Length: 173
Image (tube, rainbow, N blue to C red):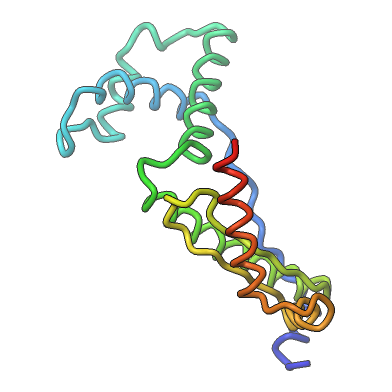
């Protein structure tokens, strides 16, 4: 083992950050931004500072009961989910999102391998012939030796077969 890997195993790095909960103040800002910025062209939208002032001066957003507060928070949570998990505008955007997310997963697998000493591999591919995402594979340490030695297949060959299967499955539905 490399000395750097041993240091990381001993140190037990933590790479996770807590998620941010939706707060009422942010929910009110979001609601006001949706209201006033809806028809504004890019560059003419209200700033956060201006939105805070609008919320402060809006009598309908003051002295809310708990149901109204919860509704604002629920709307913000729903918006965040849509932003995070919603469909992308086009195939190129989906491919960029796929690549970016996979790079984060690869880092996390490396971190997990360092912290636990485990072996991991992952295969990913597009789900439709018109998608522009690249088929990919990744393995921590020498885990791909398992694929080559036991399954008698190269990782590239598995990716190709996985892509064919996924595209055929998607066309049949």
